Image (tube, rainbow, N blue to C red; front, side, top):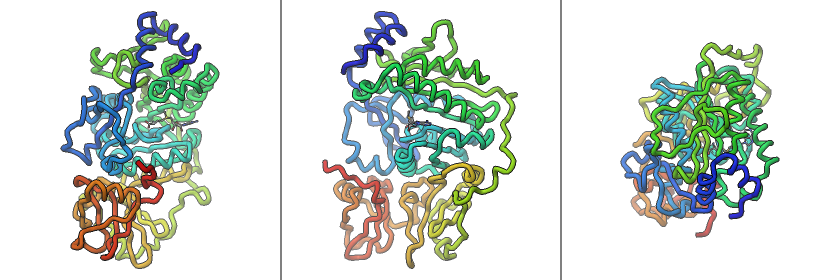
Length: 464
Ligand code: SAM
C-alpha cells in the first residue's frame, strides 16, 4: 500500500522515530478479522477464536471466512466487527449502572456499535440508532433487526434535527465520520482519498455534529466520542474543544490494563485521558475514544413550547383497522411475560416495549423513524402474516410457530429466496425455519410447496 507523503509526515510528528517506523510497518501488515457473538441468541456457543480482551463476546478469527454464505450471520448469531471498536463495550459496562437508560448512537450505520450497545445496556433500556445517509440507514435497520433486540428505535436524521428535542439521553455515542486513517490497512483504497484538506473538513464537521447533539444529553450524562483515525485534529483537539468550549468534563475509563497496549494522549502539553488503538501496539485496526460527562449542574435545555404538535404527515399513527382476532393471534406470538404497547399502522401491527413507546412518542414529531420495537404482523387478505422481524426477535415466543430445522443447502436456498423443499410431514401454514436451532425466517407451507417469505431486499445475490 502506498501511503500519502503528508500522512507519513504527520505520523512522524505524532510518534518518535522507532515508534513511527513500527507503526508504518504494521500498516503494511495484514488486518485482523474479528466477530462478536450475540449471546442472547447463541448463549452456549464457544468463542471460535482468541478472545478480544476488552469484550467477552468478541474474538479474533484465524482467517476471513465467506461471511455471506454463513446462515448464522443472517440469523443474527454474530456480527463482524473490528476488534478495537469493541472497546465501547468496556466503556459502557463501566459507566452505565444497573438502571435502564436512554442511549443515542448518532452516527450508527452499519450498526457495529449499536448491536454492541444492545448487549451491554441494562434490561429496559432504549437505544436510538440514527443514520443520516438513507441507504446506510436501511442497512442499519437490517442489522439491528437481525440482532433481534426489541428495545431499539432506528431513525434517519441529520444531527441538527435532534437539537430541539431537549435533554433526553443518558448516553450519547458520536462515532464520527472521519478521515478513516485507521482503516487504511483494511481498505487500502481509502488511503487514496486522504488529504490534509479532507482531514480539516472532517474535524470541522465533527464539531458541528457534536455541537448539534450536546443539548440532547442530560446533565450528568455521558458522551462517548470516537473516530477511526489517528490525527490529533479530529481526536485530541476535538476533545479539548469539548472541554474548553462546550463545558464538558473528560473522564478516564477504569481498569484498562497496560498489557492491552492502548496508547494515551498524543497532544503536546495535554495529558487528559484518551484511548488510542495503534496497530503496532494493539491487536486491531485504528481507533480513538474519549469519554466525557456533561456537568451535573449544566443548564438543562428544555423542549421548546409547541413542539409536540404533529408535523403534517410525519409518523402520525393511522386509525386502527386491525381485526380483533388477528391482533389477539399476533399478541400470542410474543413473550407473554413482557408488557408492550401495540401500535397499528394500516395493515401492520407493531409491539413496542413500554419504554420504547414513550420515547418514540416524544421523537415522532421531530424525527424520521424507520423502525421501533418489533414489527409483528401484517393483515393480507384472510391471512395474518408474521413479519421477518418477529422471527429475528429475541422476544419471539418459543412455541408460537412450528419449526423445521434445515440443512446447509436448504438454508442458503432460503436466504437466496429460492424454493425450499420441506419434508412431506412438515406442518402446514407458517413454519419457522431454523439453522442449528436458530430462527432463520418464515415460509408458508401450502403442502405441495413452501412459499419463501424471506425479505426480498435482503436475499443473497452473490453467486459463490
Ligand atoms: N458507528 C458505526 C458502526 O459502529 O458500525 C460506524 C459509523 S461511521 C464511522 C460514521 C457514520 O456517520 C457513517 O455511517 C456516515 O454515513 C455517518 N455520517 C456522515 N456524515 C454525517 C453527518 N454529517 N452527520 C452525522 N453522521 C454522518
